[in-house]
Length: 158
Image (cartoon, rainbow, N blue to C red; front, side, top):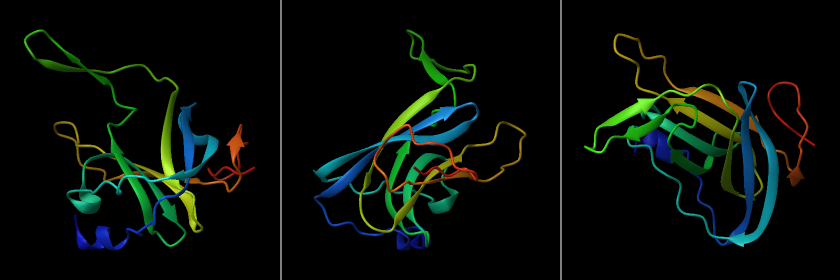
């Protein structure tokens, strides 16, 4: 992991309260739709990015207003297609039509965390130029519950 990337990681003392945050992709945008408080839990260490900010893939970060990262979870990009394996082991990637997706992530419920960042940095297709990471920033409401209404500017609050 790059030094710059590592320096942005903030240590969290566990066990502590944790939020289970439901993020939904609907109508071509991400939004936080529900949060549940877990009174006490220990989360795994934040996932590392092998090439720092230049890493390829998809990850979600819990971030404070100064860019400090409290938690990071690397996962397959939910907006890409799926892999289908043939009997001989050959893998084919299938594209699928746009559809709604819901993800649940766990973030520490500590003072300072104000945003959830969804980052996608995919390898360019043959002949295409790299466009760099795409970062979607969602405001993390302090309120716990569901059906959190939309807020202008892409964030959400109650």
